[in-house]
Image (cartoon, rainbow, N blue to C red):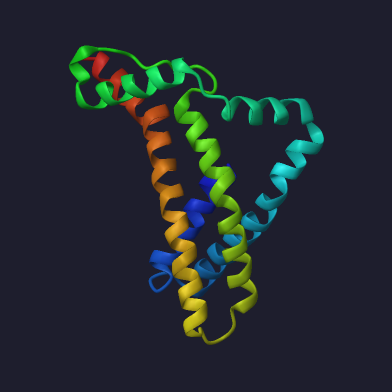
Length: 168
C-alpha cells in the first residue's frame, strides 16, 4: 500500500502541480510527505512485531540457488519466445520477488534521505540545490514506479486480459 500510495501521490503531484488547484496540490504534497515519513517506520515495525518472518524474509531473498538461475533463463525465453508456453514459477521468493526486495532495501533509504532533505530545505522559493535534490529524488523514484507498474501488470492486468479473452 505504501509504495503504491507514494508513487501515486508523488507522480501526480510532480506532473500536475501546475494544473491542480491549490487545495488538491497541497493535499497530494502533504499526503506524499506523510506517507513517506510513516513508511520509514514500517520495516522497524515489521521487525518488532514479527521478527521470525522478518529474518526468514531476509534469509530467503539473499539465498540464490540453481533453481533461481534456471528461473531467470526461463524468464528471458518466456519474454522473447512466448510461443514456447513455458510458464514461470510463481512460488514464494522467486528471483523476481528477490530482486524487488533487494531493490527496495537498497534504494528506499536513498529516497527517504533525499525526501526528508527536500522537506527541510523547502521554502517559499526553490534554490538550485533544492531543485537538484528533487531531480535526484525523482531519478531514484522512477525505477520504483516502473517496477511497480510491471508488478501490477504481471500480477493483475495480464491475468484480467487473459481471463477476458477466455470469454470469447
